[in-house]
Length: 429
Ligand SMILES: Cc1cc2nc3c(=O)[nH]c(=O)nc-3n(C[C@H](O)[C@H](O)[C@H](O)COP(=O)(O)OP(=O)(O)OC[C@H]3O[C@@H](n4cnc5c(N)ncnc54)[C@H](O)[C@@H]3O)c2cc1C
Image (cartoon, rainbow, N blue to C red; front, side, top):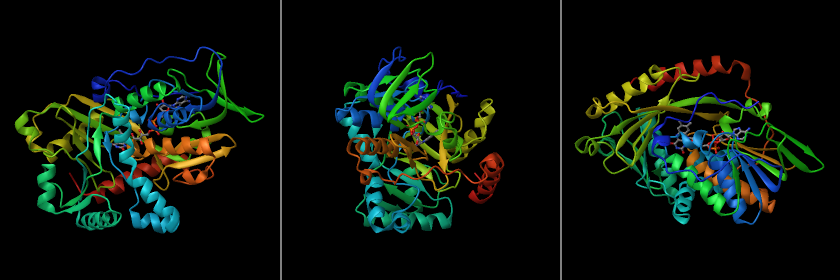
């Protein structure tokens, strides 16, 4: 049974996005080469790149395009992974590690290239991302991180305290580094743009079409869509991430699905706006429970960060973020909050996306940490290339067996303990 607790609306993005392409339910049985499940960046990028290769593809989204994290996120388009280049070489070896550094370094390019190539109606900027350091230890790491990426030829640089404070418009950070490859998009407009591009390329995109179950027989896969309607295909690519809990129960135990929360002010008056992120950067910080903030294309200030593990009950669940926003940017303290919303990320045990291939013809991409705008767009292209060519070397990560989180049943207790520990160690705000 498919179930989702929290509606997409009203978020800042649903209130300001460009219109979605016309889509609807699958009404009759269908046969196609590839079925893609999930209408977020990963699924739509897979469908687009398959269709561009002339492969017939049908994508099923349970609710609406961008209903999951892709329509709710902060819209920061940041290259890289949780691990720094030297860590990737150590963890994956010289050859795969180098390929991974190359892949991760280009994930933001993939987003801006698609927006430009398909002339998507997506407000976007590319003025760079700043990672603000909240402690001396984090500042040291930020310095090393900038150094490592600079060695790969990336446009990055270390920022001292006064440079950071001037570029962010807050005195809360001790320094940081800037990655000029990064930028921002209206995330829901972008995922809708991907859907339109996929449809234009020949993909069939169905919404309001939850896949209830999957079965396979004699090398063919069947997706059962309810009311007796089904789709059959040679291959299935599953991109349901933190929103696909019930389709493959064993998959659910490989992630911790946690909410992250956001608030947004109205467009700021010009005299305040020019004091915050005056050069158009976006920012997230080095805290374990990280804070992320930016201005949108209308000059609204957005602040994102942790929230309760459970689904929100009311505006009080965003109160801590509103406090943070006021402390961080006292110049905007009198601004009201126009939008409060949240979405689920799928945290894996190593903070990397995982690819699984549990049966011939079934490919799964799961794991949606805070860099998914670029990462899942690029993952989709890699999955499509793999399906089309059969060459596993094009995948950034090797397919691996499905493996549960240890003590999955106790995850709420575990997460609450970790969050408390992080809050104590992250320092106050
Ligand atoms: C609040 C928030 C802020 C974030 N901020 C940023 C950021 O600033 N920058 C960044 O890079 N990343 C950010 N992320 C992460 C990023 O949004 C995700 O990594 C990315 O959107 C994941 O895309 P996806 O396509 O893998 O999954 P999703 O977008 O979650 O898509 C999965 C889709 O599958 C559908 N689905 C599930 N089950 C079924 C089924 N049975 N049948 C059919 N459809 C099904 C769901 O309805 C959903 O639409 C943020 C995430 C959140 C939640």
